[in-house]
Length: 330
Ligand code: ADE
Ligand code: ZN
Image (cartoon, rainbow, N blue to C red; front, side, top):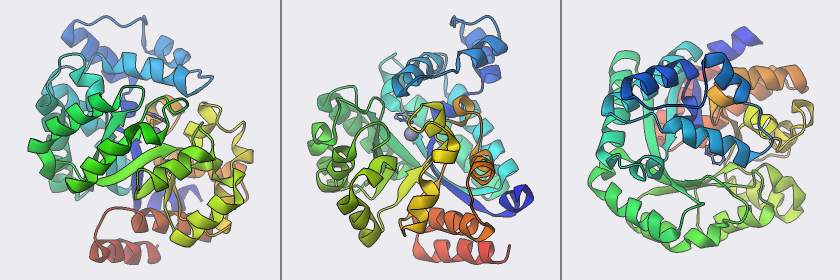
């Protein structure tokens, strides 16, 4: 099955570029930019990756992002992830970035976006990897601050396909961002939001009914509400599920109790993704392998999950069909 997973051309729809920051690169950039980090070496960093909740992870994740300063830093970060994509046969990726994590430290929006997009263009040219960018608002900050970053994004609009909503979920419900999502839609952005990762089903309903999202990031708590399950199935609203992340952040106790296969068999549009792979113990293929190891999942179901990722992507229907044909041949 490992070989089969490797061979399948795959898409990734839920990936935070700041969550691909490997400790080796973090140390290199900290030294270059003369920024201190509270760890002596790479081993000590990895040891700190023992999370008890989403917040315990976010504290470390934002601290790590502090060493990203110059355009080339954002390029290097993105390029390292794209090399993993090539290695893991990921042919299309929809990448989230958190501009507020950087602009709040005085880093210009254009530094962030130019570094990331230059790497994406190089990967398209050299490896044929297609990609889109999703600009995520930090939900622990205010809606006014989200409006500021939305405004700043306008000159770079052709480089950004969608907006998203991430960071601390509980206490920061979708309704807090209703107006800024409405404005983003008017500007022509596609919409996604994290919901139902730690938050209850009201967060998922809110993302659907108040933010009008095209996809839900995570959404694993949907099985606590029969009506919601039925709705997600009827409308085929995609869920970008991240199995290793859910176990690492204790949203699920063990992989064998993960509900992704149950949701797939119930007819929901579920997909597999890596979220923050450097922090959670693996990239996309590792997520698939972990599912195969712990859950009774067939080759056909693995294939279905991979096809779902293309169907749930923001690619056009011709591109989607082309990729699905490629998958069918494997
Ligand atoms: N930012 C990065 N990873 C995240 C996650 N899993 N949930 C919310 N915000 C995040
Ligand atoms: Zn996420």
